Length: 187
Image 1 (cartoon, rainbow, N blue to C red):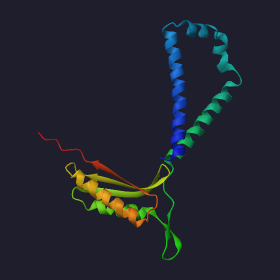
Image 2: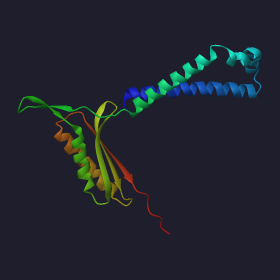
Image 3: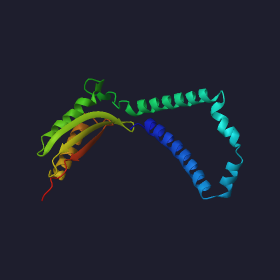
Image 4: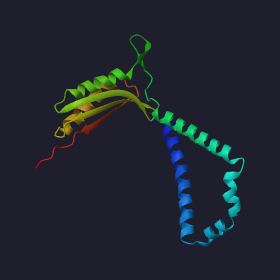
Protein backbone atom coordinates (compact mmCIF):
# COMPACT_ATOMS: atom_id res chain seq x y z
CA UNK A 1 0.00 0.00 0.00
CA UNK A 2 1.30 3.44 -0.86
CA UNK A 3 2.19 5.79 1.97
CA UNK A 4 -0.39 8.35 0.82
CA UNK A 5 -3.15 5.73 0.89
CA UNK A 6 -2.02 4.51 4.28
CA UNK A 7 -2.06 8.05 5.72
CA UNK A 8 -5.51 8.85 4.28
CA UNK A 9 -6.95 5.61 5.67
CA UNK A 10 -5.41 6.16 9.09
CA UNK A 11 -6.57 9.79 9.21
CA UNK A 12 -10.20 8.89 8.52
CA UNK A 13 -10.05 5.92 10.90
CA UNK A 14 -8.56 8.16 13.62
CA UNK A 15 -11.17 10.92 13.20
CA UNK A 16 -14.05 8.43 13.09
CA UNK A 17 -12.69 6.52 16.07
CA UNK A 18 -12.22 9.66 18.17
CA UNK A 19 -15.74 10.85 17.33
CA UNK A 20 -17.28 7.51 18.26
CA UNK A 21 -15.21 7.27 21.47
CA UNK A 22 -16.29 10.76 22.53
CA UNK A 23 -19.96 10.04 21.84
CA UNK A 24 -19.73 6.71 23.67
CA UNK A 25 -17.93 8.25 26.64
CA UNK A 26 -20.57 10.97 26.90
CA UNK A 27 -23.39 8.40 26.69
CA UNK A 28 -21.77 6.28 29.41
CA UNK A 29 -21.25 9.36 31.57
CA UNK A 30 -24.94 10.21 31.23
CA UNK A 31 -25.92 6.60 31.98
CA UNK A 32 -23.71 6.53 35.09
CA UNK A 33 -25.19 9.87 36.20
CA UNK A 34 -21.93 11.82 36.06
CA UNK A 35 -22.88 15.38 37.13
CA UNK A 36 -20.98 17.11 34.29
CA UNK A 37 -22.77 15.08 31.60
CA UNK A 38 -26.14 15.58 33.26
CA UNK A 39 -25.53 19.34 33.51
CA UNK A 40 -24.55 19.56 29.84
CA UNK A 41 -27.75 17.81 28.77
CA UNK A 42 -29.82 19.92 31.17
CA UNK A 43 -28.65 23.10 29.44
CA UNK A 44 -30.21 22.00 26.16
CA UNK A 45 -33.53 23.57 25.33
CA UNK A 46 -35.64 20.55 24.40
CA UNK A 47 -38.06 22.57 22.33
CA UNK A 48 -35.23 23.94 20.19
CA UNK A 49 -33.71 20.48 19.74
CA UNK A 50 -37.00 18.86 18.73
CA UNK A 51 -37.74 21.72 16.29
CA UNK A 52 -34.44 21.31 14.40
CA UNK A 53 -35.93 19.03 11.70
CA UNK A 54 -38.56 21.70 10.97
CA UNK A 55 -35.97 24.43 10.31
CA UNK A 56 -35.54 25.57 6.67
CA UNK A 57 -31.79 24.81 6.70
CA UNK A 58 -32.23 21.19 7.88
CA UNK A 59 -32.95 19.52 4.52
CA UNK A 60 -30.10 21.27 2.65
CA UNK A 61 -27.77 20.44 5.54
CA UNK A 62 -28.72 16.75 5.35
CA UNK A 63 -28.18 16.72 1.57
CA UNK A 64 -24.81 18.46 2.01
CA UNK A 65 -23.68 15.94 4.63
CA UNK A 66 -24.87 13.07 2.42
CA UNK A 67 -23.06 14.53 -0.61
CA UNK A 68 -19.82 15.12 1.29
CA UNK A 69 -20.02 11.62 2.78
CA UNK A 70 -20.59 10.11 -0.66
CA UNK A 71 -17.69 12.10 -2.15
CA UNK A 72 -15.34 11.10 0.68
CA UNK A 73 -16.43 7.46 0.31
CA UNK A 74 -15.79 7.50 -3.44
CA UNK A 75 -12.38 9.12 -2.95
CA UNK A 76 -11.44 6.49 -0.36
CA UNK A 77 -12.56 3.72 -2.71
CA UNK A 78 -10.59 5.15 -5.62
CA UNK A 79 -7.48 5.62 -3.48
CA UNK A 80 -7.70 2.09 -2.05
CA UNK A 81 -8.57 0.36 -5.31
CA UNK A 82 -6.08 2.22 -7.49
CA UNK A 83 -3.66 -0.01 -9.27
CA UNK A 84 -0.25 -0.29 -7.68
CA UNK A 85 1.61 -1.01 -10.89
CA UNK A 86 5.16 0.26 -11.05
CA UNK A 87 6.55 2.17 -13.95
CA UNK A 88 9.45 0.69 -15.86
CA UNK A 89 12.74 0.37 -14.02
CA UNK A 90 15.55 2.31 -15.62
CA UNK A 91 18.85 0.44 -15.98
CA UNK A 92 22.10 1.84 -17.30
CA UNK A 93 23.90 -0.36 -19.83
CA UNK A 94 27.63 0.38 -19.83
CA UNK A 95 28.19 -1.53 -23.10
CA UNK A 96 25.82 0.60 -25.16
CA UNK A 97 26.13 3.66 -22.91
CA UNK A 98 22.34 3.90 -22.81
CA UNK A 99 19.54 3.75 -20.29
CA UNK A 100 17.12 0.88 -20.77
CA UNK A 101 13.57 0.61 -19.44
CA UNK A 102 12.66 -2.80 -18.03
CA UNK A 103 9.05 -3.86 -17.40
CA UNK A 104 8.82 -5.75 -14.11
CA UNK A 105 5.72 -7.81 -14.94
CA UNK A 106 7.60 -10.35 -17.07
CA UNK A 107 10.37 -10.57 -14.45
CA UNK A 108 7.74 -11.40 -11.80
CA UNK A 109 6.24 -13.98 -14.16
CA UNK A 110 9.71 -15.54 -14.57
CA UNK A 111 10.16 -15.83 -10.81
CA UNK A 112 6.69 -17.42 -10.65
CA UNK A 113 7.63 -19.97 -13.34
CA UNK A 114 10.74 -20.90 -11.34
CA UNK A 115 8.65 -21.65 -8.26
CA UNK A 116 5.89 -23.39 -10.22
CA UNK A 117 8.27 -26.25 -11.01
CA UNK A 118 8.61 -27.24 -7.33
CA UNK A 119 6.85 -30.45 -6.23
CA UNK A 120 3.63 -29.80 -4.32
CA UNK A 121 3.00 -26.37 -5.83
CA UNK A 122 -0.51 -26.10 -7.29
CA UNK A 123 -0.41 -22.59 -8.74
CA UNK A 124 1.75 -19.50 -8.78
CA UNK A 125 0.95 -15.92 -9.75
CA UNK A 126 3.59 -13.27 -10.25
CA UNK A 127 2.95 -9.56 -10.72
CA UNK A 128 4.74 -6.28 -10.34
CA UNK A 129 3.38 -3.86 -7.72
CA UNK A 130 4.51 -0.85 -5.71
CA UNK A 131 4.82 -1.53 -1.98
CA UNK A 132 5.69 1.51 0.13
CA UNK A 133 7.23 3.43 -2.75
CA UNK A 134 9.36 0.46 -3.79
CA UNK A 135 8.83 -1.52 -7.01
CA UNK A 136 8.19 -5.10 -5.91
CA UNK A 137 8.00 -8.47 -7.64
CA UNK A 138 5.07 -10.02 -5.78
CA UNK A 139 4.70 -13.79 -6.21
CA UNK A 140 1.85 -15.75 -4.62
CA UNK A 141 2.35 -19.51 -4.30
CA UNK A 142 -0.53 -21.91 -3.56
CA UNK A 143 0.74 -25.29 -2.41
CA UNK A 144 -0.24 -28.55 -0.77
CA UNK A 145 -0.03 -28.66 3.04
CA UNK A 146 2.79 -31.21 3.13
CA UNK A 147 5.18 -29.22 0.92
CA UNK A 148 8.77 -28.81 2.08
CA UNK A 149 8.68 -25.16 3.24
CA UNK A 150 12.48 -25.01 3.56
CA UNK A 151 12.83 -26.06 -0.10
CA UNK A 152 10.30 -23.45 -1.21
CA UNK A 153 12.08 -20.79 0.85
CA UNK A 154 15.46 -21.69 -0.62
CA UNK A 155 14.05 -21.69 -4.16
CA UNK A 156 12.35 -18.32 -3.55
CA UNK A 157 15.58 -16.80 -2.23
CA UNK A 158 17.51 -18.16 -5.21
CA UNK A 159 14.94 -16.76 -7.67
CA UNK A 160 15.03 -13.40 -5.89
CA UNK A 161 18.85 -13.28 -6.13
CA UNK A 162 18.75 -14.12 -9.84
CA UNK A 163 16.06 -11.49 -10.48
CA UNK A 164 18.11 -8.87 -8.60
CA UNK A 165 21.20 -9.80 -10.63
CA UNK A 166 19.22 -9.58 -13.88
CA UNK A 167 17.98 -6.12 -12.89
CA UNK A 168 21.53 -4.88 -12.38
CA UNK A 169 21.18 -3.74 -8.80
CA UNK A 170 18.05 -1.64 -9.33
CA UNK A 171 16.02 -0.97 -6.19
CA UNK A 172 13.43 -3.72 -6.66
CA UNK A 173 12.16 -5.96 -3.86
CA UNK A 174 10.92 -9.52 -4.21
CA UNK A 175 8.03 -10.75 -2.09
CA UNK A 176 6.94 -14.40 -2.07
CA UNK A 177 3.69 -15.25 -0.29
CA UNK A 178 3.14 -18.95 0.44
CA UNK A 179 -0.46 -20.10 0.89
CA UNK A 180 -0.85 -23.69 2.05
CA UNK A 181 -4.03 -25.69 1.48
CA UNK A 182 -5.78 -26.89 4.65
CA UNK A 183 -4.49 -30.21 5.93
CA UNK A 184 -6.87 -33.10 5.33
CA UNK A 185 -8.75 -34.38 8.37
CA UNK A 186 -7.28 -37.63 9.65
CA UNK A 187 -9.76 -39.81 11.52
